[in-house]
Image 1 (cartoon, each protein chain N blue to C red):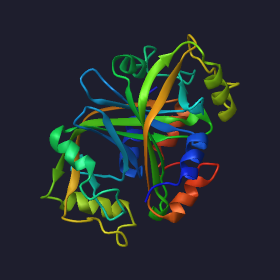
Image 2: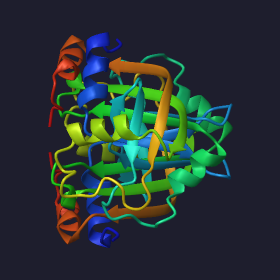
Image 3: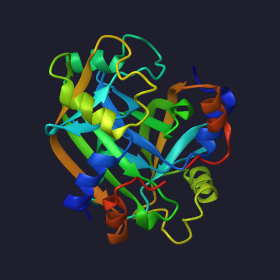
Length: 153
Length: 153
């Protein structure tokens, strides 16, 4: 079965992390976990001051060449009747202006941000416009779990 | 920093789920969470009896056309000094023979399998041969967390 509209709303608002796929020049998928927040109908993900593997982040290079991205949010539990996932496909670009709404949403969602800098370097956010959302849930109980405000840990 | 060899071993052995990326005909990335186990130097993922969105699974169609896959394992924590991720890139194929080692590894890792059927239909496993492993950890504490036998929830 699919997630309810309420569960999709709750997870996009409250799920703390997603796995982002961007596409490399050779066509392979580059995966990395991200934090994100929603504002103005799009998703915003920072290049924050958590230590990174490299300064010239692959995800930024990749979306500049091919805007197609996918995000996966999911809940794992040893009780497999509680599994669910939510997939967002969309188009991403590196935004360097009009960042205020995205920044405010990220700061509201993540209390870590007064201590970790929201921008590691120049102010920019990955701006992801969803074009398709699909979902799956193992049971009604899984849908209920996904409707909760906080992630099930 | 990167994960230690011990942490990589521990997560490949014990992490219960990963996000799998396969490539669609149009070149976009298809993301889905999977369970997996390691045996004979490769990773095995079942098409088990957890309810699926469709019988003709996109991941099987995709790897038959383009064997390139990526897996992301990661640990999220509100304490961002404990974040880590592990990325496995490889080549996948649908294996319909010589499944015994993979099946045994999956049954050993997941106690759910006596109740959930390991094969939803004909016996087959996704066989993923790793070609490149990369990793990231926010701190030494994150490396230590990833070295634990069980996933940190």
